[in-house]
Each structure stands twice: as C-alpha cells, then as structure tokens.
Image (cartoon, rainbow, N blue to C red; front, top):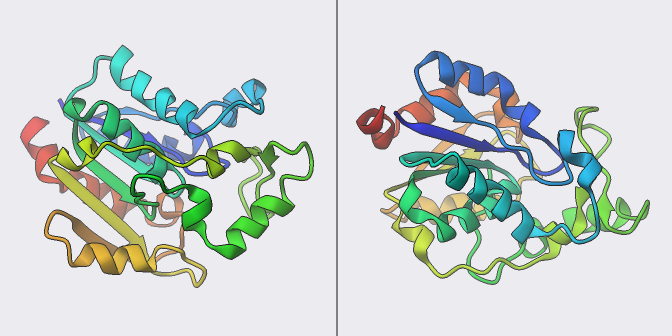
Length: 227
C-alpha cells in the first residue's frame, strides 16, 4: 500500500489536510497528517527552542515509528523545507516528494532567505508579541496559530540524499500575485528530474483546488506501482 504523508505549511496544523486526506483514503491510500511541534493542537508545546530541525524530526519520526515505506511525502509552502530535510534523513523510506507551492531549498538555505523581503518584514512585525513566534496574517483561518520564528530563520543542512528520491513533483499556484515561487517554477521546468504542474489557484492549494491536487498525487507513477 502506498503511504501518503501530508505536511502543512506555516501557521497551520494537521487539520488543514483533513479534507484531502479523506479523499485520498477513499481511494485506498493510507494517509498521515502530522502537526508540527508548537502548532495546531500542539500549540501548548510552543517554546523558543523549536526550530526547523524540530519540525524535520517530527515528520521523520512519523515515518520511523509507523514503519512507513513507499511514502509519498507532500509539503505545502514552508513545509517544503521540512520534507527536504526528512528526505535527506530517511530517503530509503520515500518514493516521491511533492512540493505544493513550496520552498525547494539548497543546502544552507532558510525560509528567511527564500521568502523575500515582504515576508521577512511580516515575520518581524508579527513576532513582537513574545519575540519567538510569528502571529498568523489576519486573512488566515482562525485555527491558525503563531509559528516558531526560529524555524523560519534556521538554515537547512542537506547532504544530497533527498535527490535520490525516485519522483519529485513541484506544483506551482499561479493565481496569486505575491508568490515567491515563480523562479523555482521556471528553474524546475528545465530540470528533467522533476515533474512540474501549474494550477490556476491561489497559494492555499489544499483548500482551493483539492480535486486537481488529489489527481496530481495519485497520478504519480509510484502511487500506482505501490498501491
């Protein structure tokens, strides 16, 4: 059976992926929707020590303790940083990586580096409450919780093992003007190791275009081979 792990983006918890998980389970897939430490229902664990390494370990441990193999590992937005780190740790457990309008970092990159000036300014302005968490933008779902600032600022360390994953899919949402992902989209279009798709929707792909997202995930070669 193919296992699908869906990692939510900044400020969000596993609740964000509940609806799409239900659709995938109805098609016969086993789906996991972890919440990263300090967010969602784990907001009570928030502290100033939570960083990108913490979030990478959160998801890597789901794969280890559930003993998952043939995993399609999906990350939205900020979670592109997370799934890259997970794949670098446990590449042998992962069959495909899906970046859902997400950051695709190189060794030494951070969210802070890749997000752009406007989002760095937003993070600075919204971390004034306690100094170590970034409160969510006003337009986001009311269930969103403050995001650990250190996870945005920490540089990722990659040894290159993540590149050995069989399939890599990048989904570009072309329906929002402030996207920081255009350059990534244009670069990966030229890379034969990647499949690239463009969706006519805003950044919140899971909410705005779930049917096309489900089709993209289940259309991966490994999803048919291992199901």
